Structure formats: structure tokens, C-alpha cells
Length: 179
Length: 227
Image 1 (cartoon, each protein chain N blue to C red):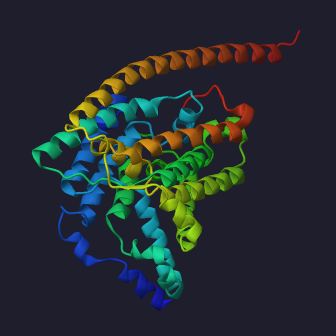
Image 2 (cartoon, rainbow over the protein chains, first blue to last red):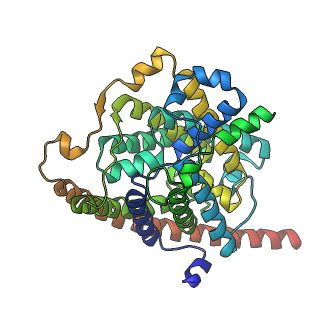
Image 3 (cartoon, helix red, strand yellow):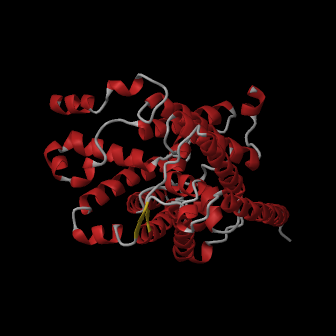
């Protein structure tokens, strides 16, 4: 058993099957589909509740996302700890700031990478709230249950991602480097 | 300061750590998230190079994991739903909101290279820029909450609201296994094609690397012994 955790990578098909069983476990044990972006919204609600409690009462959106640590926040903590355990056990853990493919196409500047990571994060957060789910909660859980929402989100995500990649990286899109 | 700490203590509800099962239990979330984190790390998914390589058409690890995930997950969920062991939890379909939200989400994904779950996995792997992305996601959802009061966003959010429906209900198909069979058949074809193309790409990048190594060593030798 532990031999398999020492391996650096698993076969993608096997990872897909484990992922599907995990989704089934989430449906069976917690009676709700997997989801991560709700946890970030709850963290935002908690931050606003702790810092500005008077203002947070006047925002109607926080009625649906009460400032209580709940299941999806635990999922985020679980993902961080699981990935940490797996990467430390197989010797993959390495502190990095600028990924290699970004260095090939945008240069080695740390401040630039952090700035664009933050801007991209804001776009991801806004988009996931607008679409009412992220890749985990809307795309995977939606397509698995055969809902139109998941398929629409999958196609529009692919369109937006391709368009923005070509516009953002311009001529440096193809880098001759694989992760 | 003390009032802040008291409010922070209020956010933790002790009734959430009593049981393992149920939608409110924190233990359930931790267990599911731990398995998910191991799967993401072992599948080589939580890396900027792989996510961005998917949009640059040079790394198809994502689709090779995602296609079996979707088809096997669909079969498992509907089979256990027919038995009666699990219940479906269908998300709401609002066409325009999902279209605009998906385009914006994809644009952010191609810039930062981490989606919400993968950012958490990448932070566990030691990528510090993922933490900045996580802060950005929290900031983006707070921004949306502040803008939600306006009536303009509300019209986008509820433009073509179909409610909580699935495809078998829309097309009035009496048995959902027809849809699942068609989807699994398409997935198998797609998986075969994408695996072959990914193998071809891997071989060609290997050749490019070898040629660059040879050229690099030749150049270094020429620099060492100039004519």
C-alpha cells in the first residue's frame, strides 16, 4: 500500500477512478456534491463579519452564506493537508513562486507573477459566484448528474480560457516545455 | 480587538463536529478533501504547467483524468440513485449567468493557472503563488457580494432560469440510461483519441529536448574551443 504512495505519479485513468469514487463517497456520506468555491465565499463572509460587522449586516448576499465554518471550508483544508502529505511522502515538495512555463513566456519576475495571480484569482472568484459554482461544484458535479448547467459551464469555460490564453500570452503561447 | 476575537470564536459552531455523516459535518469534509488532495497531487494536476498547458494544447493530462472521472462517476451516481443509496443534488440552471460566469472563470484560469480546488492542492505542494490566487478568489467573491445589491447583475443572474432540471427531464426521456450510454460511448472514443495525441506530443517534446541538448552541448564546445 505504502509503495504506491512513494511513487511520484499515478496513471491518469486510475486517478480518474479514485476521483469518481471520492465523489460517490461525498454523495453517500455527506449527502451533497463536492464543491470548493462556496468555501472561499464563506471565508470572505467570515472576514467581513469579523472586521466590519455593521456593514456585513446590510449586505443581502451574506444571508445565503452565513459566517460559520462549514463543510466546504473543511474540504479546502483537507485538500491542502492531503496534497502536503502526498508530496512530502514522495519527495515532490518544493517551494516555488514562478512556475517554469510562466518563466518561459512571461519572464522570471516575481512581482509580475504575483500581481497576475491575484488578478486571475479575482476573475475566478467573481466568475464562479456569477455561475454559482466552480470546476468542482458546477462542472464535475453538474456533468455527472446530467444537468445542462454543467455542460454550458464546461463549454463557456473552454471558450474563455482559449481566447484569454491567445490574447494574454500572444506569440509565447507555445513554449516547448512540459510540466 | 477582544470584540474581534469574540466574533471569530462565534464563527465556529460546535454542533458541526459531532457526527461523521450529514451535510454539516466537518469530519466528512476533511476525509473527502484529504482523498481529493492525494488524488490531485498524484494525478499531477495541481501544477501551473499542466493547467496552462491544457489551454496551450500541449499537455492533455487534464482530459485523460477528467474523461474517465466523468463517465465512471455518472454511471456510479445514477446506479446508486436507482438503488436508493444516494440522492441527486441538482444545481440550478441559469443559461446567461453560466455563460458569462464560465467565460470570466476560464479567462482567470488561463491567467493565474489555478482553479479553486487546484489552488489549495498547489499550496500543499509548495507553490506560493497559489496562496495569492486563493486570496484573490476570496476578494473576488467579496466583490461580487458587494455588487449583488444592484439590479443590473440581478437581471443577468435570472435571465433564462430553468430551475433545477436534468437532461432526461428536459427531453422527456423516460429512462436516463440512454443519455448515460451515449455519453459513455462518446467519452471512450474521445479518451482513445486524446491518449494517442498526448503520447504523440510527449514523444515530440522529448525529441525537441534531445535536439536542444545536442545543439546546446555543441554550442558550449564551440565556445570553449574557438577556431
